[in-house]
Length: 57
Image (cartoon, rainbow, N blue to C red; front, side):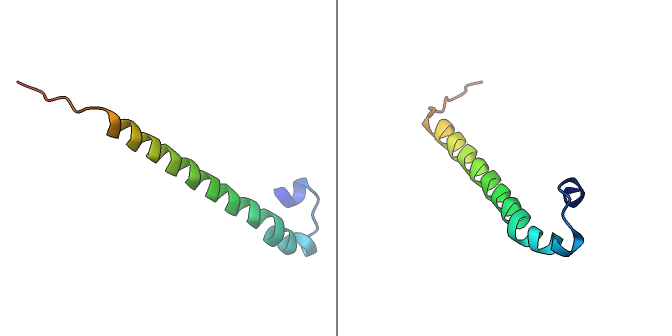
């Protein structure tokens, strides 16, 4: 679909994918991992700072 949309010839597709698309996909994965790690750290900080309340029955 990308090759057709941007009219990239079949002969140039492998080079384009290796140099452009692969880097973009890799960066997307890195960004997602960074976002998840930041969310986990925020949750740990939030739950770590709240005092635990004892419950009585």
